Image 1: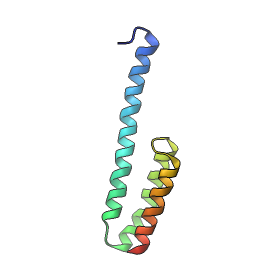
Image 2 (image 1 turned 120 degrees about the horizontal axis):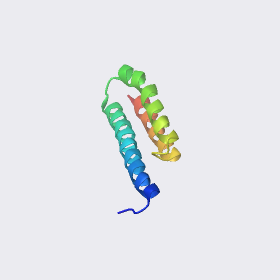
Image 3 (image 1 turned 180 degrees about the vertical axis):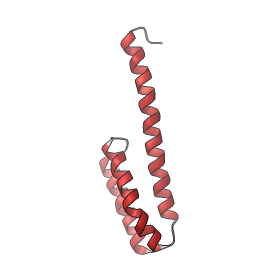
Image 4 (image 1 turned 180 degrees about the horizontal axis):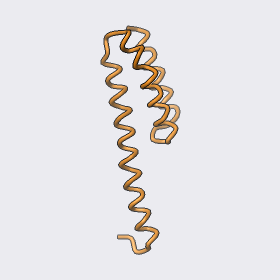
Length: 83
């Protein structure tokens, strides 16, 4: 256990950040999964910008790497175009 006051505060803040990052990452993963499951092209085209925006936000917060976000967006776009 931490002995210094600043270390105790760091543990608390790290836990809060960890939970927040998990929430954002899980939300983005669910949105990507839902978009991949769509079969209707109109619905997919409608939700694609929202999912791309969500992935960009997660990458901007450094929860996922920028290149991973680019790969996800590319694969999603290819999937929607192939419908």
